[in-house]
Amino acid sequence: MPPTPETVEVGFIAPRHLAGGGDPAWITIPLHRSSGWSHGNDPLMPRVLLSSPDQKALLRLEPEPDGQWWTLHHAAEPDRPAWYASFGARTPVELIAAVTDALTDPSSTASAPSDPYEPLQQIGWSPTFTDNGFVSPDGTASVQRLGNAEEPGAWFVTATLGLDRPVWQARFGAHTPAYLVAAFTASLADPKPVLRMDSGRSLPTRDPNVVTRRITGVLAVYVSGALEEHVHSLATRHTAPPTRPIPTREPSAKNSRSR
Image (cartoon, rainbow, N blue to C red; front, side):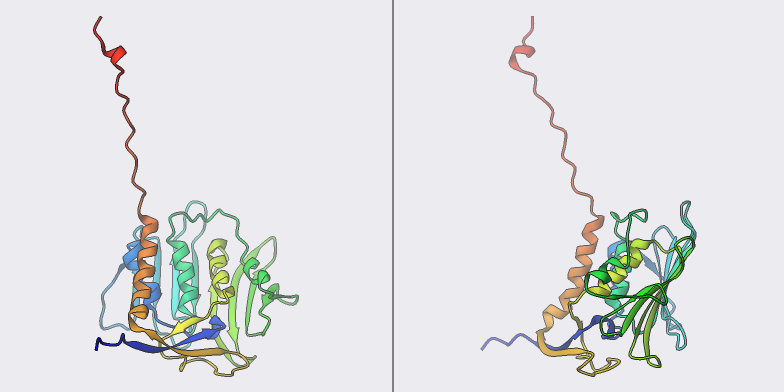
């Protein structure tokens, strides 16, 4: 009998902001292989450093028990001061990847109008009148921007299981391009569950009233090929379409006759 295709047990988790961190490769490998970010090699340090080809952006992944594990710094440009974004250890990689994918998209432009609140309003998040932000219907996630209309400040996105049970926080500096914050909130608002290889055993909570966890067997080849497919899809953004040669017109027989 032919061998049965190998399957692995995975968990599909919703809402995604309570699914745990996930595999960091979904962020680091596309940056390196699809967008040409270079990485250092220091096996004695428990950290990853990736820098953009123009050396303007630096992504650092470093275990920090009391702080943010992911930090993205971008140098100042003629039309924008330096900015940063940082993410806690349990921030789902799908949300962080939405930011790095948008940052490395050649078609993206920082001047394009973007409203990070719009994706949240579309799925029923409610405004919080006390802190200029929005909160999810179940109360486990919130987005807030400090400052005011004249002097807008930093963005804070927080996942929590109660006042004394924070799960993770993402922070975007005041000068972070709005389209990157909007990419994050759009992924945050996405209702599709995310896949976790540990079947959801590392979830911050398994309370069925808060988290939906569907355990199922998936073909191993699908799981291993999903990242490769994502990398290939991102790489095509940097591939210029072939240019068509300008056709040359053959002189007509009438015009080519000698007089």
